[in-house]
Amino acid sequence: IMIPVAISIGDPSAALILLAGVYYGAIFGGSTSSILINAPGVASTVATSFDGYPLARQGKAGKALTVAAIASFCGGTIGAILLMIFAPMLASVALLFHSAEYFALMVVGLSAIAAFAGTGQVGKALLMTLLGLIMATVGEGALFNAPRFTMGIMDLQSGFGFITLAMAMFALPEALYLVLDPARSNNEAGGEIKDLRITRDEAKQIAPVIGRQSIQGFLIGVLPGAGATIASFLGYAVERNIASKEDHEQFGKGSIKGLAAPEAANNAAATGSFVPLLTLGIPGS
Image 1 (cartoon, helix red, strand yellow):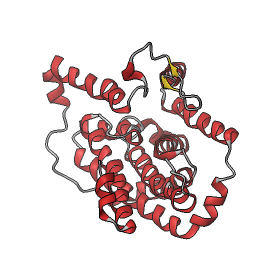
Image 2: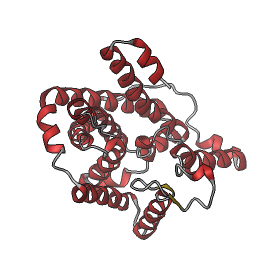
Image 3: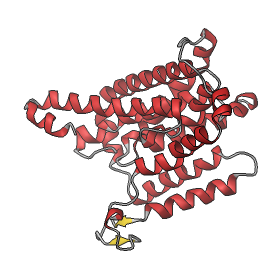
Image 4: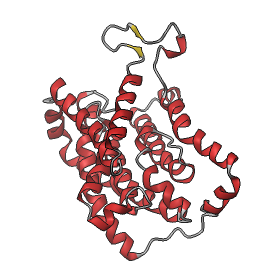
């Protein structure tokens, strides 16, 4: 939508700032809907809903939004600093990644889904991963532009859109839940957003998480095509796996660490994606 506006500006620097601002705003804005209504605005905020929405259901929506804002700001800031320092060097490293390396990275990202599954649910998680891969094959092929599994339906030429899938998997079930059982929904709802503050202890808990995932997310974002979505899922999986037993059990139930990790990772990855863009002319995502 903003591309015509950017072209009309005339100054390349101002146009780049405009588009970068829209890009960052979209990634951060997606976390708000993920936390409040369990409907991710963009793909990179799906992992944010895993702990953000449970926090909102516990009446801690304000705190969840604050944690997301802090993690996003710190992740973007750390990523910007790393961008200024290491951009030329990391661009040359990114060129060393070829098909085999990207395949391995994608396998790691997809297998991280198993880390989200509960006890005895790994098989179901992997089955849903396979279903997602099958759905991703619908549409025109990247190499030969031949339609695949479109069944002659023109609307499927470009494949399944993320917004459509997100609405079907997150927003629609939540809407039906509110309609079918309003009394229970009202009892579980977080109510008004009042307290936006976090305690000093909570800040100490999320500080190392933000630091780790900002660096990891930035490095993933540097790779052309990897993007913030893989960074957010890997960030969540890593923090869940290295957490103590007590903290590990809280993931998926309203852990502020589980909320901070994907938010820091996806914003740092968004900054990292500018490395191949600005140095090689290759979009990072």
